Image (cartoon, each protein chain N blue to C red):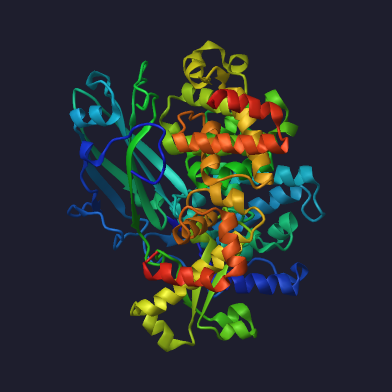
Length: 339
Length: 299
């Protein structure tokens, strides 16, 4: 078992501040044989990583960065390629395969001591890109590599790392209830790719935000990772508004027919579309009450069994919005469903 | 089961008998799993076991389902990593509860090298079959959650419930006046979706020895003041955030926004962000005093 170096938060702040205030150009480089005094290893349970291994990590990432414009400013395409390639490479490193790599202080060490030049090239001076956490320059890539690995047997093992946009990665991985669950995370990523083929990548940002809200809400009451694979595909495609028949054929239709339910004759798809717009507009006008918000969230989660008070709150909200003259057709759709 | 409002009926506590988790470290004697496991290191192996039994008569009545339709999954997800929710779910084990046996056993081995900081054990009972003609409030879909519990076992000593560290605040804050404060809450309101525990750290000023001794001795008034400061700071920033409505109503569980929203709801039950914001704007003293009072209740 290889133990990884940890840089405690206070020391991380101090070293980072010194690096940024002195100026990245003055960085003296990484010396694997001379780690900062504050670096610690867990006292038992393995051997501290060898200096040679740290150097190999440095060389591996540096080579990927150089192939993608490191040294220059780096175009958006180059930075994106760096992210995808570095994520795959990091996920494949055996020294990073243990629970040690889940620690923020390990990644603070990696970004601040080993790769401040790469973090600076990729993101500039933003401290969250150096300190440990989901936004750490390399921690986020390692996590992506771990979550979105299709497996060694796949012909396109790292395809998801190239296909998802930065926004999609953030939407999935920065939500602990979804991003911490590899079964769900990879299923959502695959659903995102199918949806982007259907809707076009340009439409995906707002759709992904809506979809993630729905997935999270539904996962609270239904264990989505418990579903058979084909059912999970169908549920996620419905949420991403990707026509099931177009992509999967009939095997998922049993689930779809139940999922694509209606409320007073209004199709679920029409309901969620209307609810999404109403929710956005009601927020903008500051009209939401906790109950009307809960009612709209339930509809977005395709949970149509509203309580009486939620129904009343929703009616009141629709009346107020109607009075202002907002979203007439959406109010009609929702009104038909709940009255 | 939790504060989630389920749109269908769920199992009552009397329908489910779940033994507490037992734990064995490196094949030692079985012992009840507490909130901290001593002597763990990455070379250790951990075994865990528990038993779950469902009373089918009570379950059928609870769920308004025909007893012959009852079929459940009992599943355990074991995860690890810093934060309120596991950073990574390492695996899931599932058993079927049905007429052949209403009792299942879990005996799980988790390699120490896969773990980090915390072992998180989430047990759920879900519906394992679709119900074609359910009663109006009955669960009907595979995966509908009917019961759950969650246990977290800390593995490494430096991960307290709330991250607190004795430190040289001057080294962090430089020569500013704030560097001589007895404590300093290190956090940023830029990212409300961050895990609450990962998003902040409370530093106790190493030069304030008497103060640190009182905290270590768990002096209730000191701890109350500290926690009130933490709650007040975070809630003030949340309630003045332009996106407070989104954050208040739709925060990711375990996130900084979710924790702040939960404190605000406890301080002003049933009130919306507009109301709370008006308290903050017009009666800042009451706003802060509310958290001083809440901190006294151990919240």
